[in-house]
Image (cartoon, rainbow, N blue to C red; front, side, top):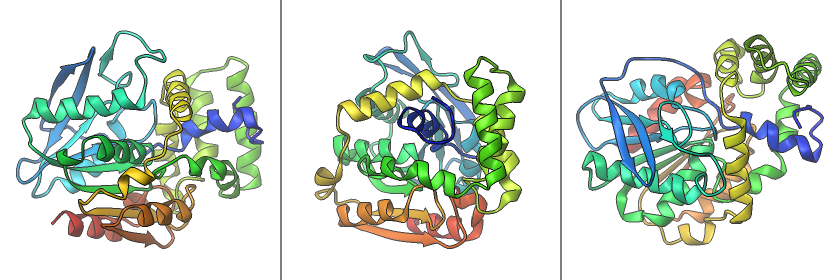
Length: 309
């Protein structure tokens, strides 16, 4: 399932790579657990002032470690919260199965965290897969949100799945594709060593960043992840026919959609979300792939900070 010629049975496995972020580890100021619905959700908080910003990281199946860097960048003048989604990182969940790993459960974890921390409302930034979660959260709990940022988001439905495999391939060189095929074969054959996962990550990371100096950062992040959890999430997304577009037409809070023009998620996904969300603003970044704060740091931070102010 992990070969790179994007047969139908391989696309889903590679989608795990779609929603990842750079891995910059910083010490958070506070940390703790929110406990509800059979899960203990681990969270970290940076900054101390202003309306809090929750960052929902990509994956699915990845912890929040790689978002400590962007959290630190945004923590000036506000409190920023990152958390490990159920089944990942330090969060604790008794079982991974079709009853525990659902989009509804993951949204309930977010809302339980808000209540645990005592906030009446907060701002929400969803990156990549986190954008799908943020959109669904806005549908189920619109009154818990002040502002929403969809950062390189998978969108408000599953349309991104039609083209993401092709776009990943297009962003890789022939050498990258050959190397990726080789290491995927090795891993599929049972070599799950760190070295094999890192070499695969090095081959694949170029698809996610325009500025190739960030490839090692993304490659390291790509060594992590829970493939079983990832598969369960996509199984649930397809079973529920995930589509928030109609419900979000009545969402009245301000929304920023920020997206790289070279992203593996096509700009048409961001443009469709912009049309579905009547209060949204769309920012497209030149020479930028899946990580705005890496490829176009100044422009990305300026847009996000300005929107939050």
